[in-house]
Length: 135
Image (cartoon, rainbow, N blue to C red; front, top):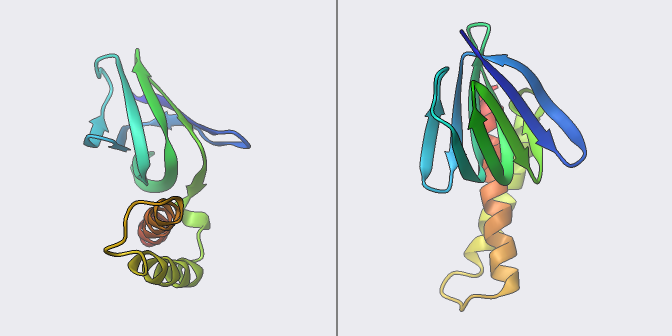
């Protein structure tokens, strides 16, 4: 028994196929999905989704969105997504270091649009780096 998993971004279908297990970065923490899971709707944060398909773990960076689980079908609608295997690790490391420095420049400052953008860029860079390691 397996799940049918669809990961959809506005510009592409990132994954569409069977999966044995899915681990999602929800806004309330990581959520594991196995066949027979109860019906659920969850908000997703920027983070790394792990999926096990054909006995092999894969990672996908999700840039916020929603996940719906119903009758062993998992549909994930996100603002953006990227397969971990397609991420250049060296570029991801450089992006993370740059985003870290930019976010550090706002430490101790009041909330602002620029500070929020720096924090979002850091979360994205951190997720891309993690996914590049996981494949």
